[in-house]
Image (cartoon, rainbow, N blue to C red):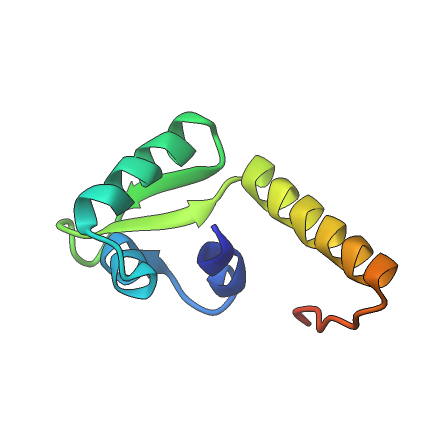
Length: 89
């Protein structure tokens, strides 16, 4: 989800990219994609240019959950006296 959050404005992220970035077996990545999709946090759609590829993106709920998690991490860091960089859009 973090990669989808980071890439949400830059480019489309396909299942293959997520597998490569995570360094996890494709079966594990596909299983978790299914779980996150069932929870309504991500969506999977066909690539219009290459129908073999599936494009992943965060849903509105997924984006909200990621922002909540990042905000919670920021607050935790502040309580610990640590500074943290935030992604700038």
